[in-house]
Image (tube, rainbow, N blue to C red; front, side):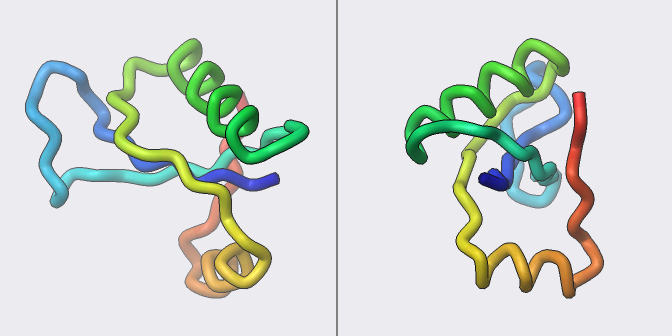
Amino acid sequence: MIYKVFYQETKNRNPRRESTQTMYVDIEAPNELEGRIKARKLVESNTDYNIEFIELLSDKHLEYEKESGVFKLTVF
């Protein structure tokens, strides 16, 4: 399952919508909740990012992200 992680690069400043960035991670999990938990742990253990939100991408949403040219799977 592919998850889209919305984050701020630093925890030292208040989050601002204009500086929100995204990454995509592939997580194997039995359900969406477990996937979100695993994604959060993975990102937190490998970065100092301030995670705002994590969402599971549907097949249609994933296709849109791939077509937009922004999609790049992050591997830790």
